[in-house]
Length: 471
Image (cartoon, rainbow, N blue to C red; front, side, top):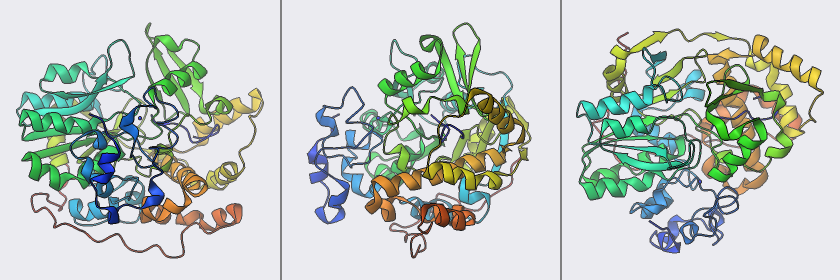
C-alpha cells in the first residue's frame, strides 16, 4: 500500500534449518538475532509465534522465499540481506540507471499513461494487470500465473495462488495491500511441471525472483518467466491493515477499494459506490505509529524497477494507470493488451524541489498536527500548487527514499552498506547540503562505489537494446 510519508506529505514452514543450509561464510551475524524478523512480522502478525519465522533475517517482508525449496538461496537472493539490484540491472538491461528520471523510476524503454477501454468492475484501477495476466493464459503465452487472491471471507487478506485459467485470474482482481508470501508458489510450479510462468509481485518479491532466476531456470526447467511489477511501499500485516482502516474511515467494514491518490488524499470506495476521502494532512499519525514493517521502511524500490513491465498509477493523471516498459519482453506483454487500451499523456507540473528542505526538517523533527483551518489550506495548496503527474511521482520517490534512509540509519545503521543501493545517494544528491545542515551528517557515505560486479554470466536470451513503442 503506497502511503504518504508523513502527516503532511505525502508479512511450508521455514525454520533455522533454512539458515543452516547456507554456507556460514555467506551470512553476516548482524543480520540475524536467532529470533526471526524484527518489527512487522513477529510483533504484529497473527502468526508471530509460528516456527515459520525462525531463522529469518531481522528485516523480512515475508516474500515466501524462505517458505519454499528456494530457502537455501536466501543469503544470496534476499534484498534485506544484501541489495543486489544494481548487479541485477547489469544482467537484465546490460547497464545501470542513467541520470535523470531513471534514478527514480529505474531503467525503462518507454512510459505510458493507459487504461482499459472497458474497465473490469472489481479491479483496483481499470484492470490492466488482471486483464494482461488473463490474456497471457488465454493465448497460451504462459501455463500459470503466480498472483494474490483474497482469503475467503475477506477483501484484503492475501492468498497467494497459482492461477491456471483466465477465470482464476479474473477472480483475483483488486488490491491486497498486505505482506504476501507469493514466492512460496514456485514449489507448486515445480510440482505441476510448468515451464512457462508469469509472476505478479512487489519490488522486494521481484528482487528475490530475479536474484534466484538462474536457479529457477535450472531446477524447474523454466523456459519463460515473465514478471509484472506492482509499485509498492508500506505494506502491512492483515491485522494492522484492519487497524489502519478503523483509524481513517467512518465505515471501515464496508470499504471495497482504497488507494493513496495523486490529489493528496486517501480515496476509500464503499459497497454502495460512495467514495470517502481523507486528506493526507488529516491522517491521525499519532495513532498509526509503528504499524509499518521494518522491511518496508528499509526498502528502496517503490517503482519495482526489475520487472519486465511495471504497472502503477503514481505518475499518471487521476483515473489512469502508469506503465513502464523495461525490457523487450515487457513491450511484448504490453502489445498483447494494446488493442484494449486507451493511451494518454503523462503530464508533469509543480516543483518538488521547493518543498524538499521543509520535508527534511519535518522528517528530522516531526511537527504537531496543525489546526483544522491550516490543514484545509495545506490540502488546497498541495492539490493546486504541489507536484503533479510525473513530478508527483518524483517527489514521492524522493521523500520515501529520504524517510527510509533515515529509518535505516536510526534502527539498522550497520546494514546501510548492504541494503541501501548507490543510486539512492545519487538520486538525493541535489539536497545534500540541506540534509547535512539538518541532520548534521553527510547524505552519502564517504565513498559510494560502483555497482557490484555481475556474479553470473549475462543471459543472452534477455535483450537489452531498447526499441521504440508502437503507439
